[in-house]
Length: 462
Image (cartoon, one colour):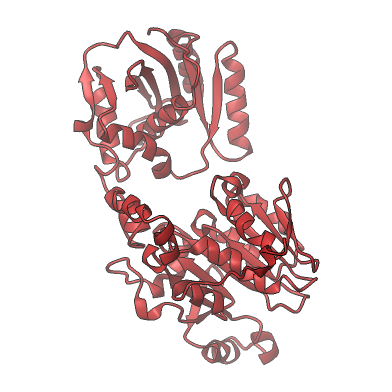
C-alpha cells in the first residue's frame, strides 16, 4: 500500500482537464465513445477525499450497469485503493481514511428517485446521463446540497441521444444543422432558471439576476439562489491518447460500426437518427417454402395490444412471432400471428396458440412497466399453467432491443418460412422506426433475444 500511495492520477490535457477544472454548478462531459469520460467522473471527487464530512454518489441506470465487466465499478477499483480507500462490494461504496464516502447507485425506475428524499449530497455524478429521465435528473438537483464546506455540484457523462432531455439542455453547444458540437463553445458557462417546465437561459449570472429582480419581482437574496451555471464539454477518442496507446484497435472498432452508431459514438453527432431500412431490409431474409427439420430450440414471443379494430380506428397489433434456431446456427422465423383484438380475445389467442405450438416451445410475454403490467403478465402466466413462460420487462428503447436481431439479419443468418404473413411482417420491419406500427419488430426482437438465452435444446422438430 505504501508504494500505491506514491501514484498520482491526473487528467489528460484537453477536454478531460477542462471537465475537472470548470466551476459550473452542472457540467456534462462527452458526446462520443472513448473520450475518457468515466476516468474523469471518477477522478473529480478525489480532491475532497481528505474532507471527513464529504459524501458523494455516482448513478448508473441499474446496479447491473455498475458491475458490468470493465464498467465504472471496475474502473474505480483501479484508482481508489491508491488513496487508500476500502470498498464494500455488496453496498457498492468506498470509505476513505478521513471518513469521506463515495457510493454508486442505480435509478432504474422513475420512483427510485424518491429513495433520496431528504438527502444532502455535495457531489452527484451521472454516468451515461441520457439513460435517465429529466425528472430523475432534476429531482437529484434538488438533493445537491452541502454542509461539509464543499460547494455542491453535479457532473455527468453521456453519449449522444437525440431523443433525450440532455439533447435539449445542450442544444446551444450543438450545431443544429450538422449535429456536431461547436468547438468554440466547449466549456462556455451559461446560466438557467426554471419556469414551470421550461428552462430560461442567460449568458451571464448578472443577466439572470436582473431578469429575476426586474421581471419577476424577486428579492435579491432570494434571486441569488435561483440561477444555476451549466456547461457542456465534448470529447472524442482523439482526445484520449492514453486509450489509443494501450488499445489502438478501439478506433478501428468504432470506425467499423454501422453508419448511425458510427456518427454518434465516433463523431459525436447529436441529431442523427435511424431511418427506414436502417435496421431491416427485405433482401436480408432468405425465404424457404417449408420449416426445417433440424430446429433445436424455439420460442413464441408476444407483444400485446388491447384494442379491437373497427371502422374508425387502426390500433396496434397483437403479434406473436415463433422463432427457432437450427443445428447450423441459423435463426428461423417460423410463423407470425398478427391480430387487432380486444383483451379477452388476446388472452384466448395466446392460450390457444400455446396449445397448438406444444410444450417444447418457450413462451415470452413482454411486460409493460408499472404494477398494472406486472399484474397482467402474472394473470396470463396462470392461464398458461403447464407451459414454460417467461415475462420480459422492457427497460431499454425499441431501437436498442432491435439491434441484436438486426445484426443477425444483416449478416444473412435469419431465414423466413413462406406464409401469408410474410409481406406485412417484412414491411413493418423495413419501415422501422418510421412506420405507424412497430409491434412486429418488438415481437421479433423479443423472440430473438429470448431465444439467444436458451441454453438447453428444447425442440427436436416442429
